[in-house]
Each structure stands twice: as structure tokens, then as C-alpha cells.
Image: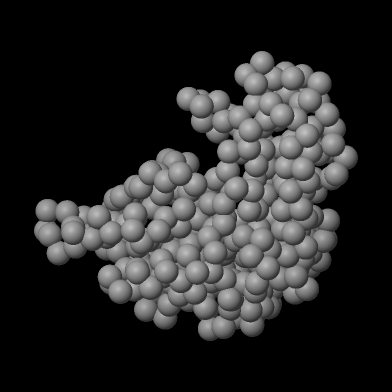
Length: 338
Ligand SMILES: Cc1ncc(COP(=O)(O)O)c(C=O)c1O
């Protein structure tokens, strides 16, 4: 059964799986000194410029490594209340950095300098944790995407105030596909210091990468990767997937497809007057409020999550393997239930 629950419900893109099988050949040096990791690192460097690359098993691990690179235990991370690091990582970022999260309520998952300004009065006061990182998700947990202008404004604001900008890019491919620009243009060129680059939600079997753009943050990163148990001795099997994804823009093809399917879903939902779409559909997620009576019967056929128990808002996500037929059947089923 296909689902609209999450982009990590989908399987592995066939080309990625073949790349893993190809890497299963003879022996290779362990702990990332293998030929596949070197090639993948080279591709990341070709795309982003001079960048330290560290691989991780999952997005939580990538975020933890990224934040550890930026923080002393008395420093803090400013993020949206909805940020995965706050809402869905079981306290991993605070537990492993010793730092705290300063969260901000937003209407659309996005931070902006004016929302962060009130926290600056804490800088220099020994009684307060010291804001040191602004962490944003791109695309956000609410399916919205920061424009280049918004990103630059946040990076400038962070740097002017002695902070770093971290991007949780579990869905950076979807965001960049939506913006229609290059990966570097949407990250390094906007002033991002460090990023968790997503793989699993865009067709990989397993693997994320931490991309450390700011040279100040590069030195300790490998030690934090090891200390947080994210250094894979057979790293070639993560790296081979990234090499396949990056070498001829498979990442973009997959992300464009899932975004296109989300737009197609919106088109179909717009034919049902009882469905109210609640967020801008910038990437591959659709948030909506639908008649209560339809939720459980629809979930029996298609898995998806109720995002907000109070408002009964639901979330539907498209993946690299969502088809037009899936969307049509989903919308038809919903229509018949209403
Ligand atoms: C925005 C965001 N960041 C990070 C993650 C990574 O989570 P995990 O540790 O489950 O791979 C997710 C997964 O849902 C996510 O949505």
C-alpha cells in the first residue's frame, strides 16, 4: 500500500540500491577512507566549494553533530517550536550538547530576524544561556520554503550578532527544487555555516551528510561524529548512495517529482470544497483540515498523520515514488468519504 504519511515511508530508488550493490565488492579501507567516500566527498566539494563532509546514519545524528560543532554547553540554539530538533528528536540535541533550545512560535514554521531579536538581550548576561546558533529547517516541518532573501537576512542577522546559521536540510533537495536555483546558491552563497544534508527522505536507503561550510567549525567535526556514534566503519555504503544521487542530479529529479506530486494533490483537493489547505505548499508536504468523519476511514486506505490534535489538521507527504494514479485515487477516496 502506498501512503501519504511521510517521505521516509517510501523505499529506495532503484539506482541507489544498485549503487549499494556495486559497492559490495572486494575490500575497502574502513571508517571513510574508502574510494566511494572519497568520490562522494569530491562531488560535495565540486557542488558546494571547500566543504568538510561527515556522514551520519540519520537526520537526528546529523543535527546533533552539526550543533555540537557550533556550541559550548552554556550556549543555546534558537529554533522554531515546530523544528524537528525541538519536537521530534527526544531531546538528543540538548542532551548531547549540554545546551538549550530557545523556541519560537511561528505561523508557518519559518524564523525571521524580527522574531529572534527579543532573545538578543540575553547575550552577555551570565544568568542566561547564550544564543549562538539559529537553526532553521529547509524545507520547514510545515512544508514551507525560505526564499534566498529570507535566508540571507537570517545569515546576516546571525553573523552580525556573533551567531551561526545551521540548516536542518532533511528536505533541502525539495527546497532547492522548489526555489529553482543551485544547491550552493541556496546555502553557502546565502551564508549558511553548517547543514544537515538529507538523503533518506529523498530516495536513499540510509544516510545523511553534515556539510561544514564555515572553516571555523571544521576542525572538531570528525571527533563529534565519532563521539555521537555516527561514524560508520563501512561508510562506503552510505557514500556510494550519495555519489549516485549527486553525480547527475538524481537528487533533483527525485525532489522535483515529489514536489510536482504535491502540487498535483493540491489541484485535486481544490476540487473538493470541504478541504481547506492550511499552509503554502512550497515543497512536498500538504497540510489540510478536512471533515472529521473522513479522517479515520481515509487512514484505513492511506496512512497519514494527524499533525495537530487540537485543530485536527492533517499532513500528507509525497515521495519520489508517488504516482499520479496514487494521487487521483487518494483524492477520489477522500471525495467519496466526504
Ligand atoms: C525536518 C527533519 N529533520 C530531521 C529529520 C530526521 O529524522 P531521523 O533522525 O528520523 O532520520 C526529519 C525526519 O522526520 C525531519 O523531518
